[in-house]
Length: 309
Image (tube, rainbow, N blue to C red):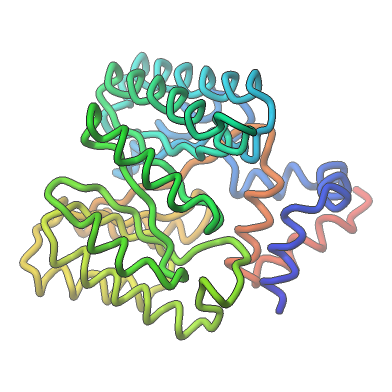
């Protein structure tokens, strides 16, 4: 129930204004968001890479309904990619892109505009010697997003896809995408979806995650295991061993600010670990979905909102 409330709040303009103007919001946000500028993202990326981790940088923003704004986010990605390359970090620092941020939700030609903007980001990533992963959003965008992934892969084969284990359809999508060289990030899912398309119980979602992970680990693609769940991390390691995968033929992914010691522990034992590094002003929806994933953080966050200092 708490998760459903939080996911509804992530799209509330009124609550967004309250949270964004609260006295200590910035301090709380700093735990999960690298900063507001490309320079902040590059600085944090450098720090993480120095610890033996890799990163995926995300310019925060979604549900863009203005073409100029979509192009602005596209340009922000090309800028951060150039800065990562100039800093000598780009080989271990990819970018993650939400298609809704670059025009997918625009009326009429939204999908075409999103593809064109994403294509330019992919060109910038290729020039920087790195890759792009297209984030997945709510279930109504899944077909459009996977279609754009397929189109981009014709010229940029390394483009990564994201699949969400809580959707009923995801096992089939895993079978379709588990081909040679295919990079697939598997996460549980962070949007409030109807029961007609998604599992709601934690056990159901976890079991679906394992079924999907078995498909990806047994195929010739490159699985990206996006979870903080210790049990699922252990299962992923066992599946990798069963399928005789060497370290580096798959990777673990975790969020900036979450289970940092576990990130470093996995890296110390030779696993490839990628940290999802978001930055920018549009942090509200991202933060609330992170709280929905980790309800233990809610009390901390609420205390900060009530503070007068």
